[in-house]
Length: 118
Image 1 (tube, rainbow, N blue to C red):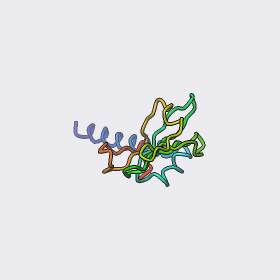
Image 2 (spheres, rainbow, N blue to C red; image 1 turned 180 degrees about the vertical axis):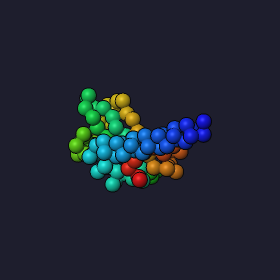
Image 3 (tube, helix red, strand yellow; image 1 turned 90 degrees about the vertical axis):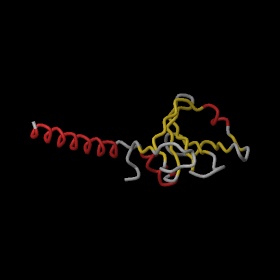
Image 4 (tube, rainbow, N blue to C red; image 1 turned 45 degrees about the vertical axis):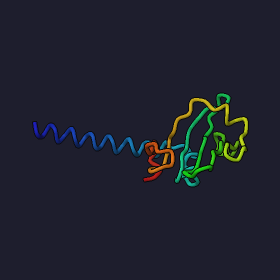
């Protein structure tokens, strides 16, 4: 029984390691690019008019968010504190957080779907 348990643990570690490597390989290029700017913040993948977009914000009060298209080109600003809010901000759907820094101002759990911080 002990040997069987050791084999299961070994296989679990190998599978987890392969999954992490696969996730790193499958990271979309714009997310890697945006991480360089928002590593102290948050990156969300959303839809806008059926197209993939990224909503990103820094871990700072009144920083707002910036919306990028699927290629990483800025298409909007959502800064409610300074009343600079583009129409795209109100039309995002199906958002999923793929990265969020630990110990953030939102008091929400850290997320790193693609292992960007490793």
